[in-house]
Length: 539
Ligand code: NAD
Image 1: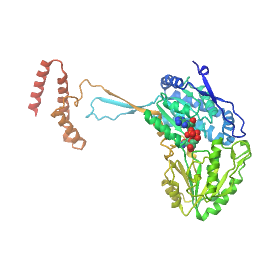
Image 2 (image 1 turned 90 degrees about the vertical axis):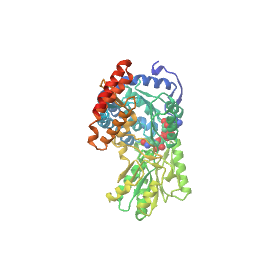
Image 3 (image 1 turned 90 degrees about the horizontal axis):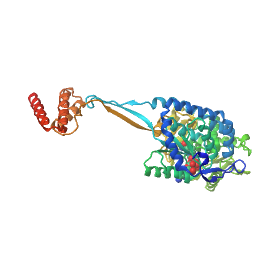
Image 4 (image 1 turned 60 degrees about the vertical axis):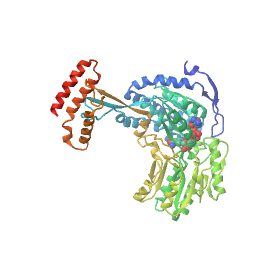
């Protein structure tokens, strides 16, 4: 049955967050098991194409994404309310560079490695370890960077020779469908299957016959995904939420720091796992810093149209409700509203917001807000800021802003995060060679860099024995074997004289082994007598 003939029941209904208009429905996948089966059947031929051909095809796919960027930008506007520059720079552009850099990194990493084997302990043997694809990788993604969160796992898994079953978020299925169509033009059929639906389809994918899972999403869902994968004993890579801190020291480059903190807190309307969601500022510059930040944020354009706005709407009503709840909780607990704080017009618009005098007990300082809100907490000194940064369930990225780079770097090394920055934030999310990873509730996965390839491959060793004699350590267990073991141990400990008798012992042992299994008992006993007489004379 072709994909278009398959049965479909129900569809995903979404609204455009810009103006609330209904978007075209997307059919929910009802034949997931068959899709996974098709991907499994297609995988060996894709693997057999070889690394260079797979790399060529993926580069062509990435080129198509960049060439067709206007389509992608329009979809990202319609489905998520992204401003065109955010969509272009934060999502589409990365595709081509990602594939190019990944190919260069992966080529040497995926080459077979010769197994070092001691000729004394393993005579006549050779071996090599190859990194082979896992098979079918299930990839479950969130809505906040729908395209960018496809690139890392989908291109990585395909490059290694896997087939992929991708489940985009139910809140951004159209971008997922578009991505699938563009890749289908260069991939063999079924090597990439896109399945659509909500948590139930994600759960069904986890229970289907897949061999590994890459999950990007919230910590709560990540725990559930990890539980299911543990039951199934399949590897899982978890890229989860963040609550990133920026530590602003008194000696920072003031204006640049205000601009940098504002950008990294509000880009993509704050809906980034690596967004600045907590600002710790040293007391001596706190008044001036908050004044400047609030002034700059209030100058950002929020017009009701992403094409003329600096900050777009939130992507969906669920996210807007969380943002409002966090702001209201902070205000109820004594935070000072310096700008923003309100919904705007139709759609999911919320004014970019600065909250001063925030405290550790506020939701906005503890839980992912994922919105255009900058909460500021004043601290006595950098030590207090480092302590407060680490006093958090999440640990994705964090930054220290100071003119004294060496001092800032020393603080950066003490932050419990996957990536720590000095005088910038989160930019390595777009760098294919940089491992994107976190600690604590931010998950156990590594999303890019060569380390990520371990998740998409498994080591398989082929070991070959070319001798026609048996191994000296096979049955029977006897005193000569014990002596051989002791002499090998002495040799390892650095006594070269111990090795002198090893070849004779091996020769004797090989004969004992064969003697034990000979079918002709007459020959066996004659041989045994001759061998033992010869050796006892020598001894
Ligand atoms: P989410 O956890 O609600 O959903 C993520 C995906 O999981 C969706 O496709 C959803 O349908 C699916 N899903 C939900 N329940 C499932 C289940 N029981 N079994 C299988 N699949 C299930 O997250 P979200 O709201 O879509 O995304 C936002 C979150 O993603 C934020 O917390 C953000 O920090 C995080 N994120 C992390 C990174 C990273 O690299 N660390 C990148 C982007 C987003």
